[in-house]
Image (cartoon, rainbow, N blue to C red):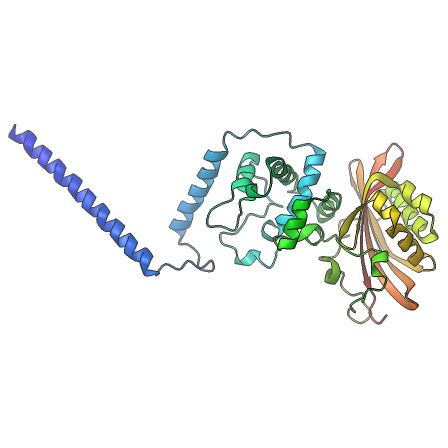
Length: 366
């Protein structure tokens, strides 16, 4: 009997000791937190043990909450295309893109966001993180402003993004459909908008009429980035890689120069999009006005080819070119260096243009 009483007494003492220790630890933690000694600045990183604990906490939390999510068909081309535009508008400042090595905001983010152009994550985890965001990070909960279908479009695109070349990325973003959500994102300053993120938005020839143009270095064209983000990349393209597609691109350029409206429209696919002056236009919208302006501007122009190349993407091809165009704007002679990136789809024996991207900048001294 006495032995049992002694054992119970010892156990009670142990419990009280543990409780007292917990109270002391909690009080000490409270004093430490309230003192402000801990540096909450993003430029003062966690210690390795704390960082490791938080990383495990984040990873396991996402996995536990996303485990029952049902993944739809992520190979739907239209879903992927929509997601490309969403990603370009909202995500590239933090998560980068092919050809975009850094951004102004990214170096100051802690924890550092993953470079999604180089790693492919579980689609369920991506959906959950995009929709719900992550506490104490720069990742917002996009579910407040975007429905599940839109979020799945981003996930579908993210599954295809790793391994894309800059030219492939620019092409798919240029073909992405206009969307109110993307406009909101660009106006709010979160991300680059379609063109800035992809380096594709730029004035077409018609957009330069009456517009003051910045001068570049002596003997060089002014940087297209001053009006349109990063310059269109032609580095992945090789001369005569897809000869028939290049021939179609040349026919398109010739038709514009000669003012052959019917030939221009015949080469544009019914669902073609034209990026002009930072805006996406349908084939019909381009035909209704800007096409006539481009033809008028190029009517008496002297065109000097600089480079042209192409790249095969299965049933698609990308053709890029750079040319100097000597023309007249409001009675004043001007030389414009123009980069053009066309995406073409093979329909039987013919190549049709499904997207057009233009960037133009004046040659200095004009």
